[in-house]
Each structure stands twice: as C-alpha cells, then as structure tokens.
Image 1 (cartoon, one colour):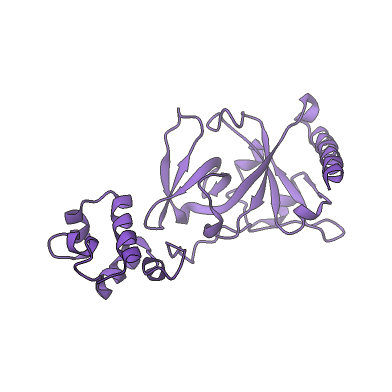
Image 2 (cartoon, rainbow, N blue to C red):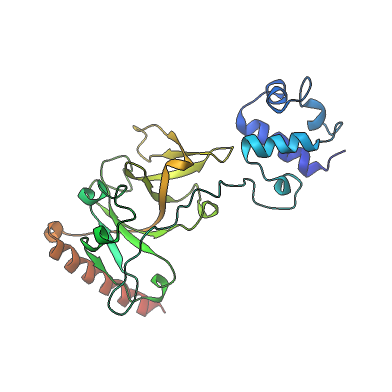
Length: 252
C-alpha cells in the first residue's frame, strides 16, 4: 500500500497530462488501468516510477513526499546570462537592448564585442548588485494592456528553471527571437508554454532546448519623446534612476 500523498501525486500527474486511467496505464506499461494504484490497492513498482522519470521527468523523491521539486529539469539547458559587461570600476553594467538590437541578440549572444556596441549604464543601488540586469524594448502588442509597443522593461537574469513562476513576465531569448511572455511549465519538463496577455495571441509551446536565456521582468521604464537617440535615452534613464534613488532614500 502506498501512502496517501504518493497516491495523490500519481493521480495528479495523470490528470495534469489529460489521460484516462486506461490511457495512462498503456503509456506506463501497466496492465488494464491505473485504478487500483489510485485506490491504494496496488503499490507503485520501481518500473513505473522509472517510466515516470524517463517519459515525464517526474522526480521520484517528489512522488514519495521527500522533495518539493516535481520535475528533474534537463541539466544540459542553461538559461543563465551568457555575457555580462562591467565598467571601469568592475561593476556590472546594465545593457540596453532596443528592438533593432534584439533582432541580432540570439545570434550574437556569446559575442562580447557585440554587447560593447550597445548603450549601458551602472545602477549604484545595493538591490541591483547581487544579480545581472538588462533592459529590453518591447516589440509588438502581444503583452497589452500591461506593456505597449516601444515600452522598456528592466529584467533580472534567471539562473535556473526552478526560479520560473507562472505569475511573472519574462524576456525569453530563443534561438531566433527575443519575446516577452508569461511562462508555464508543461508536464514532462521538456516543453514550456509561452502566454501573451493580449488574448488575440494564443499560447504556444516550445522545447526547452530552444531557450538560450530567461530574464524576469522586474519593472517598466518609461521614457519621453526625446528618448529616440542613444544620448536621449541614457539621459532620461539617468534622470529616472535619480528619482528612484530619492524615493528609496525617503522610504529607508
């Protein structure tokens, strides 16, 4: 007899995958249906646990209540920032990637010289010292009403898949594009569902192997009309950062 939590989690896996008891039994190589397992009459065999791991990346420790980590993510897929730039004082810069530069970002993701061509600034605040941040310009209307075309977002580099939350927005750097979406993990650990806020755009699924970097959106940066040039952009950015420092100073 399995404990109640293991039975509950096994049943949860099947339901999340959208299979009937008979369908799931066939997939896992179980005779007839999974009904007896889900009723606690038959114990989970090692072979079934191994199939759950092989086919759906289900963590055996999670299944038996020994871990909160449901999936064992593919270790070969790293979403950490590939390149960071620093200033003369060896402080990490925040690089700004506009819509035009974003078109070449996936192909130049490892090229340090390419990053040096982009505008960058340093944010001398403690909360920005312990992580990598990057500014991205939003292209298209798929994230309306929250983000309009041309808006800028400040995003923090994500180190691993465990940090991904379905409630946050992310800048996702794919093999051939840079998009801003919400991310939902698909059972099995091999795919992600990218979700737009604008319901005109339906969700779509991609393989995790297509993802090069993930950046969690932490705030929106608003610029005025004279931010069309690099100098204007940096000037307004500096002003907005000064205002931010003043606000933080008043609240500390």
